[in-house]
Image (cartoon, rainbow, N blue to C red):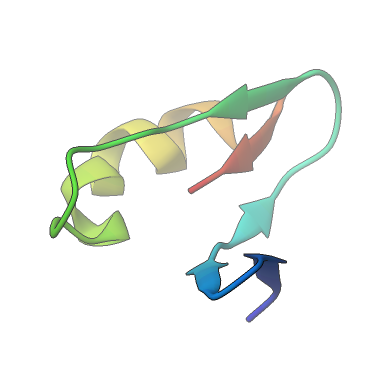
Length: 50
């Protein structure tokens, strides 16, 4: 799983699909599981980033 870091903060993210990116952002402490069905729906025509 890719990691984006800035100073002492690191974020893990996942990417799927191709095309224009759609970025799913949740509140702190919630995981990517929150976007399960939405991620699956847009990952075909778009690049979904969770």
